[in-house]
Amino acid sequence: MSTSARSSLVIVGAGLAGVRAAESARNAGHDGSIVLVGAETALPYERPQVTKEALLAGASPRHYVEHDQLVGRLGVQLRLGTRATGLDRRRRLVRTSDGKIGYDALVVATGAQPTPCPWGNLDGQVSTVRTARDAVLLHRVLTGRRRVVVVGAGLIGSEIASAAQALGAEVTLVERGCGPLEASHGRSLAEHLARLHRTAGTRLVTGAAVTSLVRAGASVAVDLGSGERIVAEHVVWAVGVRSDLGWLVGSGIRVAEGVLCTTAMVTNDPAVFVAGDAAQVVATDGPQAAPRSMSQSMAAAQGLVAGHNAVTPPGSWSRTTATPYFWSTWYDRRIQGVGVPSARSTVLQEGGGTLHLYEHRGRLTGAVGIDAKASVRRVRELLREGSSSGAHAAREMTGRPA
Ligand SMILES: Cc1cc2nc3c(=O)[nH]c(=O)nc-3n(C[C@H](O)[C@H](O)[C@H](O)COP(=O)(O)OP(=O)(O)OC[C@H]3O[C@@H](n4cnc5c(N)ncnc54)[C@H](O)[C@@H]3O)c2cc1C
Image (tube, rainbow, N blue to C red; front, side, top):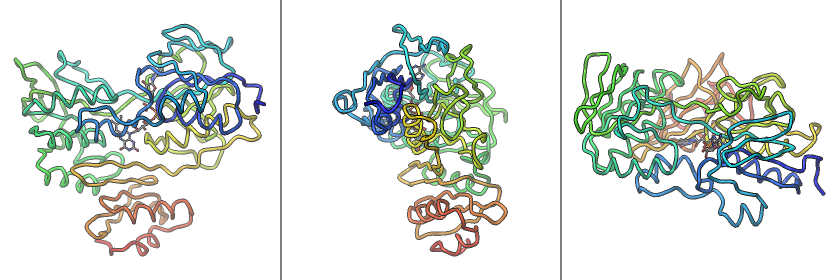
């Protein structure tokens, strides 16, 4: 028997958050229907591999779950290649490119999209990367091109630069700050990561803003505020993401940068939940709201909570308590971030790796490790325990302050 009166669950967005929501609803005892609506035609796949293995190999990433498991074991009705276009909350209907779907509970898991290049795609000479298809197309472009400019040295831009170099391209990486992740993680880490790019042979131009992109024959000219012009055969625009929530306009669901929700992943409508990159948790229902961490681990954790809560009564709702965590790989170096960065950081050496430890008012808040797996794991444990000071954490780590 179903655990709630909500017999039909509709999940919009067939990424990691959507899949985890479906699994979690079944685990919570939901025996009604589950419809998973996804704009992409592929089964949900490992999105982090888009700029890693998939870009290097020119092949689609692995699926999170196979068709038999999703449809057979979980009993999910798949509506792939279908885009949600509107929401009628009064009649509890999702409008899609392929008709209307009624729901008792709805989970929004529509992720995010790359910020588009203001100068357009110049007939395919400028691209952005989010999907498996993007990776396959970009692989072909990078393999055949000599000079490539990547704009934005965040996690994704840095991964693309690293893959492009491995594919034999001559790479220039253009970054507004003094190095990767400066705005979020501070100068010390940014300078460290900048050295990593330069040591690997990528030309990193920092403190640089792109002022125009224009076609120059078969090439693109990238003009910088400094007056420098870089000419390349292809440009990848990787300056961040934004949630594409236009289909919720007029529905009354509260939206800012993402869909606003509590740590129970419920929106201002108790029948509508949200998870993953589309979600923006606000601190209305607990001492601490989860920061907006667009990462794999957060999408999974929030998907589990949203799916569970969508099919159970409020008295048994769970909440997200996950510690933010991300990882990235550049030039075979493992970069891992845990917790929340703050203004003050200490740099420690661990074997061949480095750990940037963040603290606020003496308390440990997070860390970023470069080839420092064991230390990052320990910081994660200390953050979960919730009582560690920055000094205590530094003493615990293998090295001494550098
Ligand atoms: C290239 C890349 C590399 C990354 N690397 C890492 C990494 O190394 N480590 C890490 O922790 N995180 C990484 N991330 C972030 C991580 O992949 C995301 O945080 C995670 O995938 C978010 O999952 P999601 O389910 O919320 O969204 P998504 O995975 O974006 O899935 C959302 C799905 O919803 C669909 N959709 C959107 N709008 C609609 C609509 N209106 N109707 C129907 N369907 C819709 C989209 O097409 C998409 O398939 C990376 C992200 C990218 C793009």
